[in-house]
Length: 224
Image 1 (cartoon, rainbow, N blue to C red):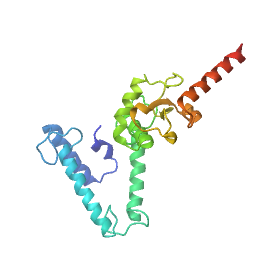
Image 2 (cartoon, rainbow, N blue to C red):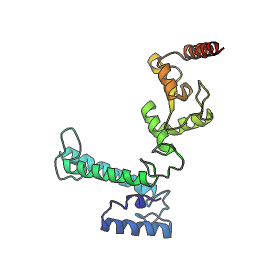
Image 3 (spheres, rainbow, N blue to C red):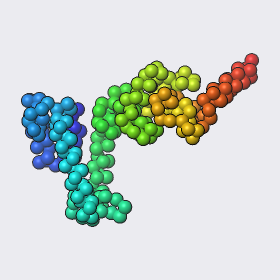
Image 4 (cartoon, rainbow, N blue to C red):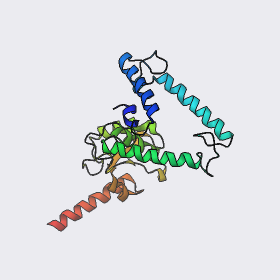
């Protein structure tokens, strides 16, 4: 599904017609809808045109912010502590709710609108890895690293060996806790069950493994 398909439920009639014409041109020519030269990797615009668009938008937002105006519409002053005016915030909230409802209804990723398939989360695997990378490592670009680590562990908990479900119970753990000088290097990371991660807290890896062994021996002894 294209970005045009996903947004067509809230675009105006004029915008929908324009977006449809641009999408049709890309489908027929396999060329960028803006420069009409390069083939886009995804969507309607090539990567070079996307980069130019982002830079223009960044400069425009910066100019509006310096002028004390809403960075979205550039007409009204922003709400205190925010960058958008109240009217733009209200419109954005309505659009977000509509877009989210549309994606959930059609089983699309809540974030990027990719098909979810059998994923139990409202986010696709790619977006889940990015979210976890930002939350645990502060860098979305490390999503591929932790995704490879997840597969390397056969998608199982490093402590219990139980299967992990991404977006449900899988979490990234630091072998040497950050509170004790551990780094965010890949060699210091492992995937564990979310509840196991809570139990461990900031215990040393060796101490926690010994604790788990003692618990398992106690359970086995009481079962005899």
